[in-house]
Length: 307
Image (cartoon, rainbow, N blue to C red; front, side, top):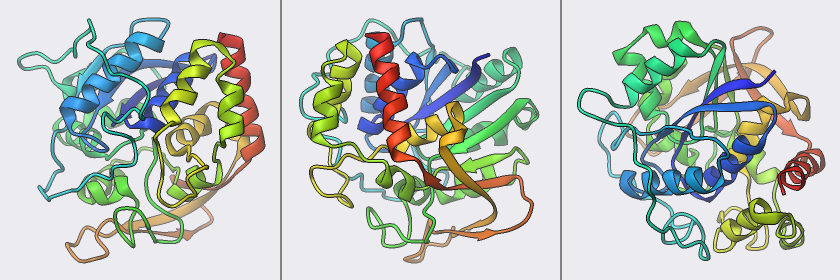
C-alpha cells in the first residue's frame, strides 16, 4: 500500500530529483506539493515546481504557493549552487500550462488542511525551510491531529553547517523559528540531516548511466549538471532531498536514533544550529547512517522501471 505524502519543496536541483522519484515510486502517493521560498525566491521556485510536476508526474498533482518569507523576517542570501534557474545549467524552465491552486481565501494553509482531512495516515515531507508547515500548524492546529508523521530535511548531526552558516544547515538557518514551532506540534518527526545527503552522493559515472534510462534518468543527469554543493568536490552530487524521501519509502536503508533536539533561534552566529542528544525514547528520530549503494541501486531500478 502506498504512503500518502505532502511534499514541501523549494526547487532546487535536489528537490527536483526528489520530486521525480516521488512521482515514480510505487511506495509513495503525492497528494499535494507546497512551495516555500528557499533555494530560490517563491516565484522561481513555484515555476520550477510546476515545470517538474507537469513534465514528470504521471498523474495531476496540485501545487500551492506557500511562504514567501520566514516567520521573522531576516535577510537570507541564497546559495548559488543550483544554477541560475534552480534546475542546473542544462534544463530550460519553459512556460507551463498549469497554475498554483491558490485563490482568494485559499492558500497553502487551507490546501494542507483540506489534504490532511481527505487523506488518512498522511506524512508531511518537508525538503525546504519549515515556514509553510509552521504557518499552517499555527493557523489550523487541527492539521497535527491528522498527520501520521513529519520528515524534515534539516539540521546537522554535529551542529555544524559549512554552507550558508558555520553552525547550521541551510533549511534550519533559513527559518529556525518555524522549525522550533513544528517541533512542538506533537507529531512524530524524523530528521534527515545534511550529513546524510552528503554521504549518499552521485558521480559522473552514475549520472551517465542514469542518462541511458529514458526521460526520467536523463532528467536526473541534466539536473545535476551545474549543481555543486560546496561541501563536496565538484564531481560529487549530494542527494539531500532524495534521502529524506527515500527514508520514508525505504526505511530499511537508513539507521535512526531516538533523540532530543534543540534549535537555536537567537540572532547570534549560531542561529539555526541543531543540537541532538541520543535518548532511549522520543517522538523525534534522527537518521545517522544511510546505505549509499543500496539507495543508488533502488533509485536506479525505479528509473529503469519507469523508462
